[in-house]
Image 1 (cartoon, rainbow, N blue to C red):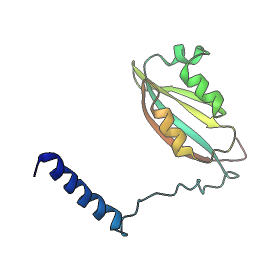
Image 2 (tube, rainbow, N blue to C red; image 1 turned 180 degrees about the vertical axis):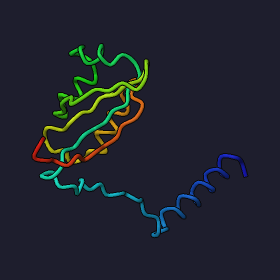
Image 3 (cartoon, rainbow, N blue to C red; image 1 turned 120 degrees about the horizontal axis):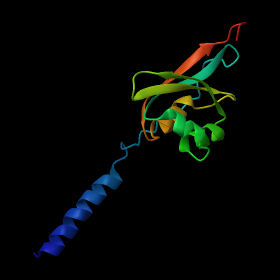
Image 4 (tube, rainbow, N blue to C red; image 1 turned 180 degrees about the horizontal axis):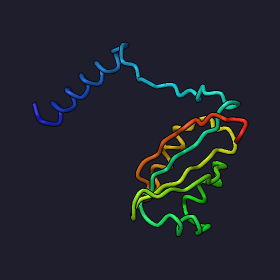
Length: 126
């Protein structure tokens, strides 16, 4: 028996075993929107950033500014950690169905070190 026929026989046996098995099921997780009440809290993304944040925020064509426009986020505050690292806080002006997915996208931006998703209670003072 030559090599090609052996491979063909083995492949057909494996294929028939896979197709005849009824217990194989793919796991598909369900993504549910956040259950935090939007009437009592506001959604904030606290972004820790490495580099010159002022240059990025002043550039209208930067990826961060475009991202903020697409997801309707506004810059609430900035802070400095040390000479090289700082950060900023973004607030969602509209309700976001999947804030963790938005945070994952923000984390892919160059020089972003870490993201925190915070639900800040709305008080009479704010």
